[in-house]
Amino acid sequence: LIALSDSEPLFKDVLQYRFDKGEDLKGMSMGNLLLTAMTKVEGSLSKGIKHMSEILRIHGRIIPSTEKNTHVCAELEDGSIVEEELNVRAPNKSKIKKIFLKDEDADATKDAINAVKKADLIVIGPGSLYTSVLVHFLLPGLRKAMMETKAKRVFVSNMITQAGQTDGYSASDHVNEASGYCGGLDYVLLHKDPIPKEILKEYEKEGG
Image (cartoon, rainbow, N blue to C red; front, side, top):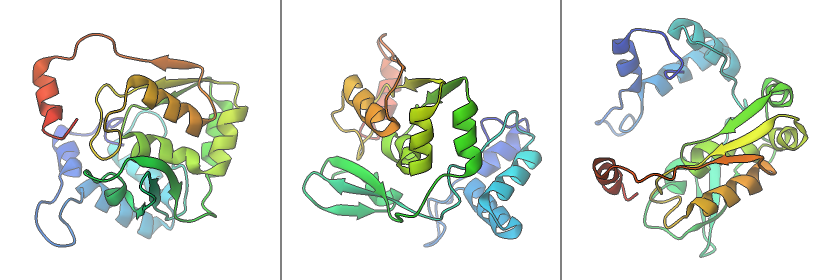
């Protein structure tokens, strides 16, 4: 929403602000809290996003992949199961074997399915591989639409590994995972040039 917004820079900063104190608020972003409140008032996530889009004067259209209030979970290579995003992306745990949704009845919205079917081009990523990018394709309707669409499917691979999710991954590991969850890819966009040292240092602080 913020990336497509034409609102005042200060308002964007406020929405991206994360609380650093409070047992219930610590780590939460103001934007997510506002969207949650809007969803409660409007009665659905789709309506909440629609009105937030109007407030932020966004260019384009944002569609939720599902209306189901569910959580991403992961089976790890040591056989253990972790639930909810914070735990799935937590560092210093066994490697992720596969991800799944907590609710088996969760499925994609009709708008999301239709958007995929009617698209000319579908760009997947970059972002947190499991918790931000591939989690959407756990929804049966969206995965089916991805396999049936006539659109070209392009995966934009991350340049840096992410602690807790893609530790030790090569570019081909990212691509193979994406292809598996998306039902195949047509093109992959990879970065080949050296990454500036000052940028690498920042990611190294996060274990990347």
